[in-house]
Length: 246
Image (cartoon, rainbow, N blue to C red; front, top):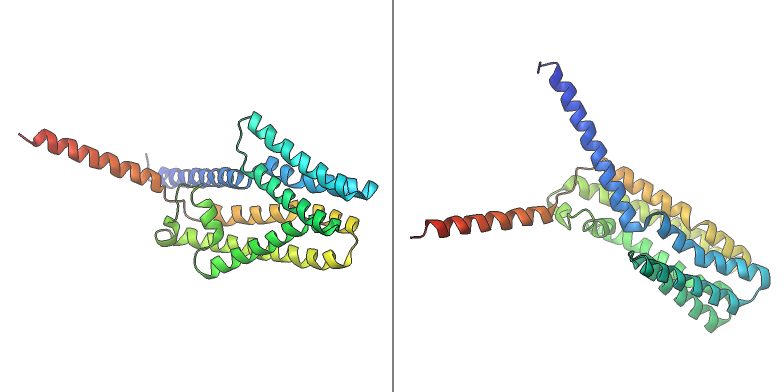
């Protein structure tokens, strides 16, 4: 290899490392947030509710249909032996919405628990970031097998997690700033369609920004691999000591 070849090889290696980092980040985000299927499971119950209510103004039928389709989505995942955390979270959200709406008799209250959750989540992203423990890092750390190592050992990733958490917090706050006034001013049908329309775009924007920040950040420290290596080294030392014992 000549001296001229080395920079080219190094550049190719850097490009490959960057490509691998982006692929790992994409896979982690897909796992953490459920991917396309998770988005569908999030949208379908609310879409069904507002569609039925738009047609016949029947709160009970709309609520039961939304809850039923949420349960069906869980059953489908169970049958396919797939992870059910996203589907189950959808069922709980819909169930709370049904309870609220049935108690008050106001169809708009079907959406109120989800709105309050969104507001709480937005505040959680911002507060944890200000506290130096950005929520997105707590969510994605185990997915990347780095746990909390980014807090003290990987400042570049901590900074990226902070940026991503700010993005999530501000995007969700902006969503709340649109929805809460409409909750009071708009009729149920208009409000429901606006809420359904705002389900996916803010989420996709937040996920995209998270991907951008993390793709440029240093790679995660695999603490699980470190633990396994330490255990193997300790076992090897112990075996060596036993062999050396007369």
